[in-house]
Length: 180
Image 1 (cartoon, rainbow, N blue to C red):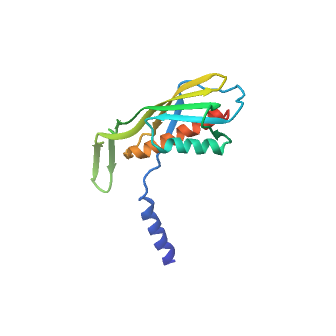
Image 2 (image 1 turned 60 degrees about the horizontal axis):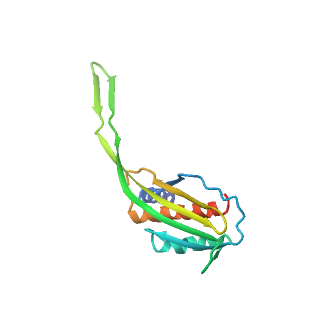
Image 3 (image 1 turned 90 degrees about the vertical axis):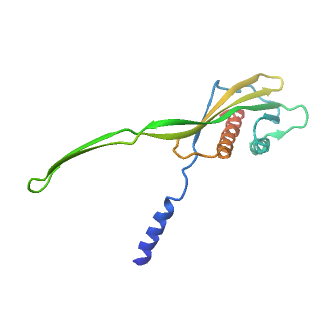
């Protein structure tokens, strides 16, 4: 019985030690539907203002989905440029008023009130990337990818936001090329 109680106490202590998960959302400014038949599945990638690993991670994601990296004359040309990535803050109003009234015992009557203490800062990241996909002997497609993280009172690092946003961009490109 002591071991169960001790284990429960230890698990509750460590439960509060983790940081909240970073959650983000991606939306496109224009929907892209590639309806034409892509003859080959070779691709080339060009990126600006993204980390060095972006091209490598995008290439490996496309290769896992049956595409081939081309040295010359690719069937699909992908260009991605990060327009901005910024940390923002917002103020959340935590003002409230409480009121209570009670009695107890003989001649013990009372009431009370309190007010909340102001405002709390919430932090979030937003970013925009331009995406251009050109199909050989076909159409060119372009859209803006708008990303925003969930608001949180916990301030995340910019590198954590960058990694998450880049993984969302890669997943969206694969989704577009695979036709949803």
